[in-house]
Length: 68
Image 1 (cartoon, helix red, strand yellow):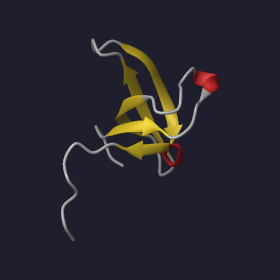
Image 2 (cartoon, rainbow, N blue to C red):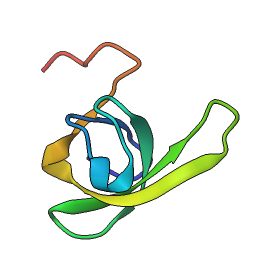
Image 3 (cartoon, one colour):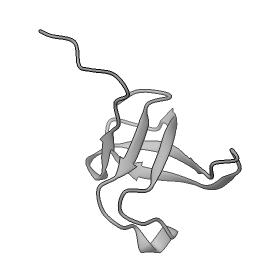
Image 4 (cartoon, rainbow, N blue to C red):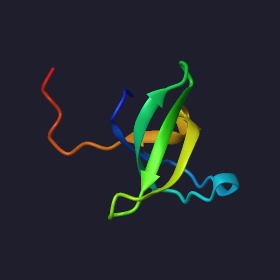
């Protein structure tokens, strides 16, 4: 995963009030294990900016994967 990838949470993170499947954007790469994700509503207003372990995220894709 890299900067500005759109991601979703793979599980609920109740300690930071995020549900499973919550969609956000990676805004910083903190280290090999964590990224900073901004979660915003449909109006673009951020409601959470949290460090999330990469293993708890899935990258969302809006186009077909390129053939290898």
